[in-house]
Length: 510
Image (cartoon, rainbow, N blue to C red; front, side, top):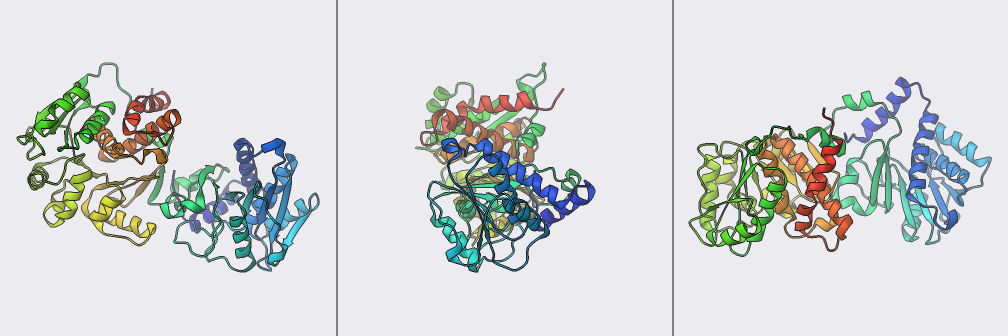
């Protein structure tokens, strides 16, 4: 799914109205019906629909949405209080039409000062329709007072399209609705995917309102959202006469004393991702651990017992993918090993954990030798070590894109909505995963998955995009079964089969 700017979204609305022969008021009705249907599906009909609903409306089209939503909820027997916040003199034409439609059936509170704002009980559901994605300033006056009152109420807050005060694609300031839910129309917005905005977004969903697909297809953007349909297009089902040689031979260089488990997690992830063969190179003390845990893997032993100091020959192109970093440690001999590997490697690699840290600490010597189109998989702190601190989420995105363009690599920045940046300066945000995955070893599993996919001759982009999606999907299945608090990295591995099977069962192939 494309992520468009506020300007593009406005143009998309106008293009839909012109090309699809629909009036703006009917397009507003579509949006309001889509929101109301989501509301009904979500089950906000607590106690036989006696839970009070408060709708706060601004004076533009977002306010018009709110008025239509209030009318539709009244038609579904909800107890609705509607408040129009009069922060200006002018209103939009579609607001006026929905205002007249609602006023005939239902009293509307007019708030021009704080004392006019209704009291909100804590058990209420509050629908925020003050400002939509067209807002380009901080909220002031009576509108700011309304936002503060909503935030103080303790009620469940639901934002129509985007929380009032939150700018869709630039840094926000001032008062902002702290939404528990956000219902975005048609497409995600960049602001919904950034960590700093979590307290203003809550749980979000994009609902279709039938905006023109031709415009969306042609609209230029550098930001995308990886959903199930996208992952299915990447996924390659296996043919009947495949054999293990059809799916490549992966090499994983990992482990050090006290961190052999990271190597196990990475190797297990690579095998579950379908690598035909997988060899792990690790210190000699890891031999029994690895062979006991994963008899399916082959082992190449380092000369040193406690850390990696060399690597097996890669000159004959025996290995179709190389991953390095999980549990690696930062011994000086390990640094020399990494230095030589980067000098010799011809194909893109998967680089994680201490391999990233070693490169970050020795950028002048190492970074220029990283093979083009390699995949870095840092968590935020590791990324910071690599590029330095950034002041905001937007600054970090710009730095992320610039780093990938400059060095012609991919960076998968891990976190909620993990962000995969490309050498073209594009960013693909992930749709799967949950907070239960914030635990030791999950990143090692991800490195293994991507290495396993890369060994099967997925392109680096395909391996990284599909890998992050499947990793998160397996985590979601694990969280559903085990709960987020108890989730472990091994649970993700255990549910990878179901995750891949889900894609296989739904993939578009003959």
